[in-house]
Image (cartoon, rainbow, N blue to C red; front, side, top):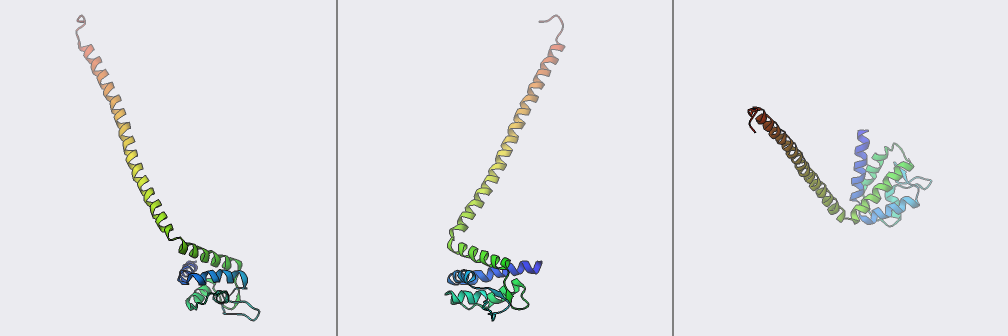
Length: 163
């Protein structure tokens, strides 16, 4: 399982290294060609994702992507890519393109994290203020009770006929 997790991370990095045009072409190629793993082409017309991208206008040759794709799919021989493998590849291509076209997303995420941190800090201050308020109310009750008891004790100490 550990190797599989590294393989998917490597696949995402390899996708991110592809030019934007190639990623778009690869998405088109995945939709219009039979995608295979473990080889460049097959006799029955299956092609690897890079060749599919090339046929759809993405003129990039990145052998590391091909190796990473085969390692991710654990290809021992040429075969058709499973639906799951194609969904994962498509999802990573789309996510990579989305991240490429939304650089301000990082700013939004940073601002959100800052707001969360500020809210946590504010919550800590508010909690301490609430605790102080509870303490002050409790202290007032205790002092009132102390004063009442002191007054009662003073009345008891007074001689009985003095008023």
